[in-house]
Amino acid sequence: MFCDTYCKSAFQYDKRKKDEKTYFKIDRQLKVNRKILKKYNRQGKTVIRKSTLVEEGFNPNFFTHFWKNNRGKMYLFCYEYGFLSIMEKNVNKYLLVQWQDYMKWPKS
Image 1 (cartoon, rainbow, N blue to C red):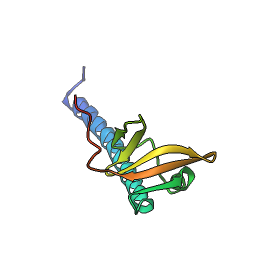
Image 2 (spheres, rainbow, N blue to C red):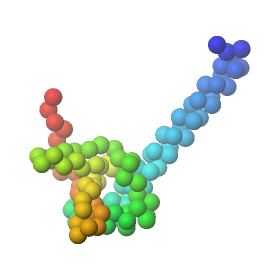
Image 3 (tube, rainbow, N blue to C red):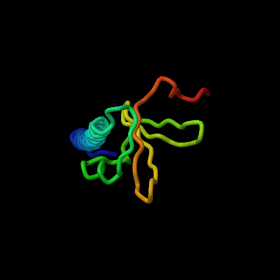
């Protein structure tokens, strides 16, 4: 597959370098998201315009895990800070929450 060990080594180096860049990009965005959610959710639960968070660099496509409540609503989390997309008076908003003890993983 490779012409010699140098070609194989160079290929593996380039591959690892690309993977690390992707990892660090994702990690950086998760930390940015957490910082923004923490900034606006000082009381444990609040509602804020989606545009306010996005303007500060929040990207809802990056999250660490999710939790589904009894009503089927899916909360996305960046570590211990979560958000739920809602529509209020024809304005896109997020309901911000903090992880609680009752938010357990479903039993299998």
